[in-house]
Amino acid sequence: MTDFAATRALFDLPEGVTYLDGNSLGPLVRGVPERVAQAMTDEWGRMLITAWNKAGWMAAPQRIGDRIGRLIGAPEGTTVLGDTLTIKVYQALAAALEMRPDRRVILSDSGNFPTDLYMAEGLIRSLDRGHELRVVAPEEVAGAIGDDVAVLMLTQVDYRTGRLHDMAGLTARAHDAGALTIWDLAHSAGALPVDVTAANADFAVGCTYKYLNSGPGGPAFIHVRPDLMEQVRPALSGWLGHAEPFAFDLDYRAAPGIARMRVGTPPILQLAALDAALDVWDGVDMAEVRAASQALGQRMIEGVAARCPALQLASPADPDARGSQVSFRHPEGYAVMQALIDRGVIGDFRAPDMLRFGLTPLYIGAEDVDRAVDVLAEVLDGGLWDRPEYRARAAVT
Image 1: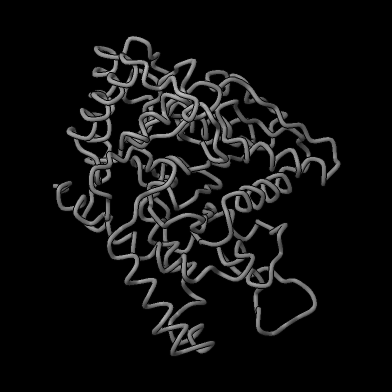
Image 2: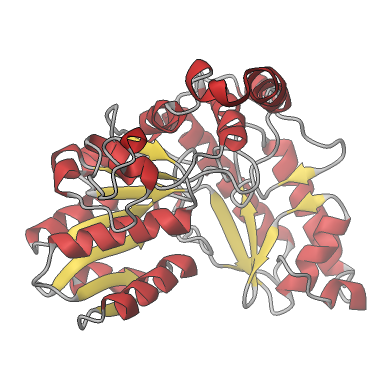
């Protein structure tokens, strides 16, 4: 069984803080500073440029990609790290559209993270071939998958509400209609059991700084279904995606396998941080993580319902229908969240009115949820949020 007391001890959490925002930025794993320092002093400092070979820097994106692959049900050699999630979305979408040249519709939903939609809009303008981004309500996705759809592009867990899509069911429906699928796992990987192989997903992408705790700006990952790999032609044909980067050919030839989805120079220090952070998952059972997360979610929902009637549940009430977060609506949600943070309970706010709380059992327990509900009730009952400093919007919400 997973020992959540033991996993909690692996995180460097500030004293007196209840951290319910790991769905936005995971906390520091204790082994990370030492590993990054080693990469800086022993590798960069002592080996200098020879570290690309001696320290295995060049192979790190695929080696660590396979560690993430194990968390998302991907076979070895089908997941690689590098760049940002925005770039990985662009890569997957450009490749998928090229593989469906007779279709013009990208289907997504209004719960998708905006950057995914922005990248689709930008790619459509660049291609200038009459493509259309069709955005429907999350519950309308299945019925909108028609024979004009080239790509179904969805975030599995809605970043605002935590609503969970049926990856396997929607992928099967898309395939029946002749479409390809791209799944954004930013709020799934490390939060709940994911099996891209069982779901037969064509592409999967995700960031690593949320539930995988790689640190701010940590590298993103991309997975490609094995039987599609050699059909994928990278639109971002970067040097490190070349078949022979150090042949310095003037013409691009895609590398075999997942290496073709590499673009730029890998961020070695951030990869070192991620590699160390992934040690937390050794011996962790994702089914047990899921069960614990659902229990924490129910505890918070019930506590808020009993003590905070001014809040409206925005997440699905059914624990099987949401990811590892719960969200509530309040017309002064931003100010309420700032009052909470000021009292040591950290969640975040999503416009226009949503308070969002990540429930990560690797370091969050029932006592944390109870404290959050206590402070939330205190803030609301006393109108403690109604102060000018809590209403002043910061750059990051």
